[in-house]
Image (tube, rainbow, N blue to C red; front, side):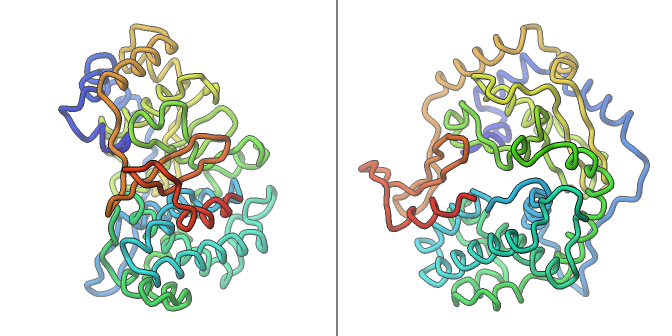
Length: 350
């Protein structure tokens, strides 16, 4: 389970609670639509009958845009690598480790997170980074699904050859990621340059993340929470997306991040839709102050029972909360850490 999968379940107690206490999603949607700029939606162009892997592409866009703010391997992808040996064989684990190591080396060499620099790297360096982001998105799927995602990357991952894996990343993904980076530089460049690396967090977790089986948002910049959406129809803002953003704030039980603002970054139109926290919850119809909503949400989480651990073949993934998120594989029955699976993963924290 995860926050998004909980919200996707209309019968889940937390979803019902949101539907009662934060039911005015239409008001948020109206606010969003009124400000939505009239711009051409940038979509990937796939050759021939190639099917666009929107699931992987959206995650890859998220990973690539994070590179402009922080130097960090995506924790969910690192966890996917740790699980890959169990679900995809030793070759998948080897190529995943090589991918994460190369990705971090690439970021340290070219420093796309350095303020004052252009977001796009030189041609070859950018193309390689984009291919690595897409491949990391595949390992993110391994983590979240507990299974090998279908597609050409599955076969190449099994061979354990990093260059072969990257060669299988479709060209449309590389081109699309570069379009998204250009749009983001115009939309988010000022925000990025005004915020030091120290106040930016990618894949932040919250005090209540474990209560829903895992919840990691996309990006925190200062006291602003940003959810990156690369959907093909940015004019459609669903109830689930709205509750997802609200849910992250509610799961911050101890107000660690002290959020002032919430935002959706709609990458395909290059637009940051921003609300003050009190404005957002006011639009949703909240009748209680935020601290009370958090208490009630925490109580409802507890009443819903322990969240199921994500995993496969008798092993699960535990999210250890900290200033930097650890995602570790553990034995469900015995509760012991599997050092052979997790030692490498812990070393990947940037």
